[in-house]
Image (cartoon, rainbow, N blue to C red; front, side, top):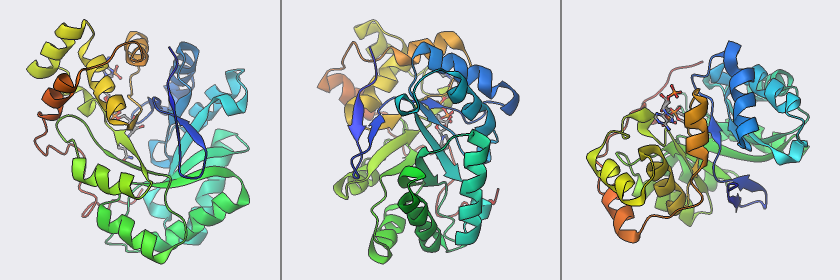
Length: 276
Ligand SMILES: NC(=O)c1ccc[n+]([C@@H]2O[C@H](COP(=O)([O-])OP(=O)(O)OC[C@H]3O[C@@H](n4cnc5c(N)ncnc54)[C@H](OP(=O)(O)O)[C@@H]3O)[C@@H](O)[C@H]2O)c1
């Protein structure tokens, strides 16, 4: 069954389930992403910092699908926050992808120590106004970063892509974004595989007769977030796509949400300052 679509705050539609490409090596990206598209993924998440945009774009172009059948996201590298650099970096992304138009472009990290994300956002607004990107958003923005953008600029981000999984449910941050019309995208939705051996997840999986990853992805989807699990293993790619023909009960959802222990895997956005 195909993924459901969600309408962003500017009217653009995004498939709720996509394919993540962090740590998909550049040399394998065209083949792996080609397999994902062949299996039915219609939403691809890449970034300048992943180093694999060329392979992702090659797979999109080789797919034979009309461009509007695939939703492609990329993200601005941390070293290109100055507006002039951001505009050049976007050009490089489009060249690497070999596409005329991108669907979604994000500021990858706020880098509050650098302190320039408001200026960076004005460059993304310029890119959106040019028509070369259908929607713009942010990633790893804490509520106070979002508030600053809303106070000092004119465009509400379409999405905020943040770490969310059963061990780090982020309900307060999610609610803050949703109340402002910002869709939440949950990165590392499987907690990079670490949540798949959890006894509570295993118990729910046994109850519904599905795999642990399917149950965790279903939990995300029923909460309304966008997800893009990553796998280079075709059987897992197919498994992660087959999550639209069953549901979890409210009680099963609550048990999984109960696993939250504030367990962030990735960097803290308030202190992360690695340029790249
Ligand atoms: N904005 C950001 O700062 C940010 C940060 C991190 C991630 N992301 C995005 O989010 C995407 C997903 O996050 P992620 O890649 O960190 O982690 P993830 O999707 O939570 O987990 C990926 C790991 O789980 C394994 N896996 C996948 N499906 C499985 C299954 N059905 N059964 C067992 N194991 C399975 C994969 O192994 P194999 O590949 O070996 O099969 C891989 O080791 C990224 O690829 C990227 O697009 C964004």
